[in-house]
Length: 441
Image (tube, rainbow, N blue to C red):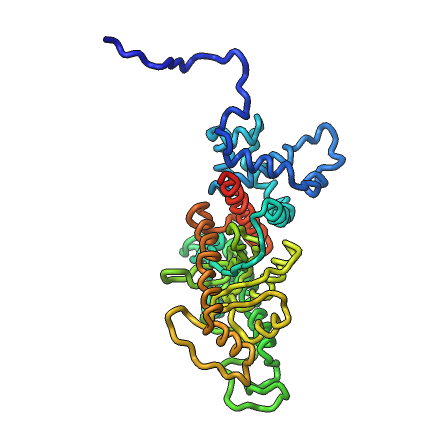
């Protein structure tokens, strides 16, 4: 008996054109992002094209924002890949609605509107609040290292910079002398384009000198912050200027020989990565609301330590949501007497670990560090222990989703201000993905 198959006619044409709304199943993430972007305030994007005239017809800003946000929400960060997806992926084609911008157009739009794109993060956080997904009962703050768009092979230590600078100066002097004393005897030597060789070395020398000066300036700023001065003669002093004994290892403003600077992204810093090793990276900070794991604050800096980010993160939460959280949880990386003192009068209850889990902490001197001693006592209570136990499952999943679900492990852009904006774009995309999933529950 012959088998009867369902009709299959690849060459069959449609009598009426297909509707874009029929391409994807109901509840698809692309529809949610499209509807959400339409509800956001995009005046800042439109303002750049005001008065352009009929001949100046850029792609519609709303469409470009949707493509970028959906791309980041699905792990497509490259403008070239987005261009290909506009032809190959139904969701991208639906969002593009017959438009096919080239990768340069997508790249330039992202670069031109980085500030506006990062500001949409706050609008999305407020929208999540209106949906009941942000309660600000408890937030957990955590940091994670993300690789910079910089090669580890394009970095140089301060010690090596000094050596290379001396070598290049000697080579330039030798080439200049050779150019002055050129004679018939040089006919036997290999032909060398001396002006080009001098220029190449001068360009390299200039880059190294600038990198060395940046490291020295950074060290001077750090020494001033520690209370040192150019005329301290390497002698530590107390707050009253009296000698405390001992000597500093280095002169004021002199970096460690191992201090490094990256030539491709000078704003990045060498940071230790999980599992061992070091990379040029940035320190990304997130504050996550307990209700639905929505990121309510996303900041980024190039300081590997988390301790200086606790107060700014809580300020960012209030700035983004308009209110203080009732409780904030953080690990031991944020512990400091200065932080506890600054937040002593805050309406937010602070719960910060005193050390690594499972390890006994040293005794705290209550006279010198009264706020730290009070925090240590709080963590010994059942209420303190129960509160801190929530930190891991609130704060860490979003960082894991950013790296493992979205696949965002390295920035596409370079420079501190650019990567700060890109990180907010990533967190906004993750929030929208989370909001779409929670809406469907």
